[in-house]
Amino acid sequence: MYYTGIGSRKTPPDFQDYFSNLAVVLEASGYTLRSGAADGADAAFEKHVTKKEIYLPWRGFNNHPSHLHPANFCTDAPEIAESIHPNWDRLTPTVRKLHLRNVYQVLGRDLQTPSSFVISWTPGAADVGGTRTALVLAKRRNIPTIQFGGNDDLQEYEKLRRLLNS
Image 1 (spheres, rainbow, N blue to C red):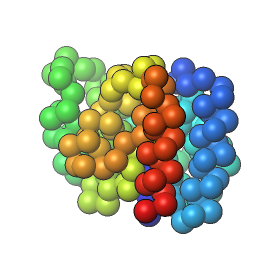
Image 2 (image 1 turned 135 degrees about the vertical axis):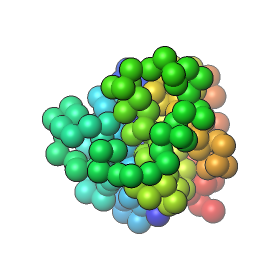
Image 3 (image 1 turned 90 degrees about the vertical axis):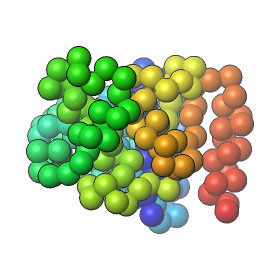
């Protein structure tokens, strides 16, 4: 069982602490984290877990030792990312690689093994920034998303609780 733990580099410290603790609980429940080695939410989810798939946009991103990066894969990820990003043709190759990483975070290395759910923090709980690619993809594939950072965080906690108890 997989879940995706992602979000803004600006994730507040209290949510980073929550995500670190939640990741430990999820790992003990049999889940494997998928994330992307970015500062903020990604780093918080990864902090205390050993069962993880950390997808990098390129080898050595953020000095992370993971070997999971798109250069190692031959897949349809570019077409998936392009179908989601509204200005794909304007992105530099570097920014495209950041978005490709987000596709793998949701669908896995083979693009056939989706996460059970996605947990994120973004300002206003909005589909913004690089996190947007993962959130939109999850929603298109009917993967539940738990989006913290807005006015309805209590509802999101409850949604997560129900999801984990089902």
